[in-house]
Figure (spheres, rainbow over the protein chains, first blue to last red):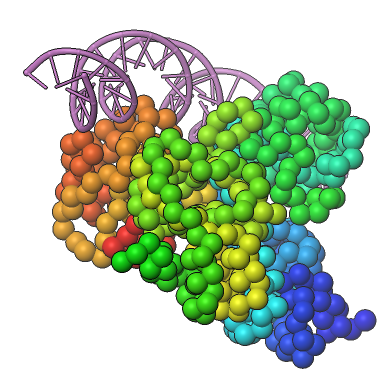
Length: 246
Length: 246
DNA sequence: TTCGCTCCTTGACCAACATCAAATCGAGGA
DNA sequence: TCCTCGATTTGATGTTGGTCAAGGAGCGAA
């Protein structure tokens, strides 16, 4: 399979582009650029003029905002299949966050102008984008609630519970998707706090932690502890897939 | 002016319905219900099946989420001209938050089904809603950043700075839009913390507080203190109007 | 295997915010 | 005008999470 076919295929898998006529896919492919970057690469900075948006084919990227006095909020951590930067079309064509590769990644960048014009003139794409935004809104709403009301151990428990298919029962063993320092940042806490909070979670809810492998002995017990700080009970009402990605 | 004319007029002022054909406005008016409620009235609860959405004509309402163990996060505080509950169409027709009147209010409720069908079949409305959601996304993004990174005094300063037209210079006197307890909740802190943080802000930035009247002697000084915890400098990049509503 | 890193953990201490209790203020009603 | 009740402030104290510093563990490179 050649490069273009591969890109075409990746694009067709995107929910936002579902219903796009083939010639538009073609134009996206024509305008696409594939690149590979190592950890640490900054793809773009917040408020920078945006010309392209990105699709992750492999690896991991983090999106973050930085305040004037240097503090950093990790807005999201993305992996294969995730799209980002496309929302710049709603921000006067400036990126609303910075993006950095956190694990060697392959990605496709696409022209934002093309996407914007499709959103504006192709009704199906408009609707897709609407639902895409709505889903994002939902995630953000949950996030606001969590930041305001959950304790550090609860946030970690919640994070863990979102890593597997909550419709299954029984003990579960999961592998943390990226390193603890980044998880800590994603959850809005310091690495030290994360470490201590995880330890507390261990004593409170019979989970086992060995390196980056976590075994949850009793999902009910973990959710009882963690989900008390959330308005949705368990299972979470906002997971995108049954077998979930955070 | 009779009731229906008044409602029609109010609806026509809504950006989301801009471009609606007159007969659709008519159908909204036909399906509208006007009501007046006193402080404390719960309009709907989170996760309740949603049939109607609301437009505030006067008074104030708060939107909030409540966790299983009873903590409450105030998601927004709304006043005249604000729409709420319409996003239920993206949440399987359940309200994503509870709504309570906090100051005697007059409001119009409208059938959600009609709105939903218009969003789906009227391209102009779809686009309006898309921009409406995008704006909301932007607010939420900012909010997440603030919750994660701003201190209590900074959050208050930021709140104050959003109460007036930031393009004007010079000393400003403003009136707090609702009571301090509610502002505290809106900013995610306890009333006691609010009181003390406001006092600290007074010593740090030469603002004057007398009851619910605040005089800002030096906007630059206040913004230098408050906006350090924000990724946007001053003036804020996400205010909807020049003369702003928070 | 050892070196050199980075990630992670731990301890000691500190700052911010929450909690509980009590005093004070202030606007609306009697 | 006086009363009353909720809003606000203040004080005392506890909890949570952040900061700083140091030690330990894991892992790839030589």
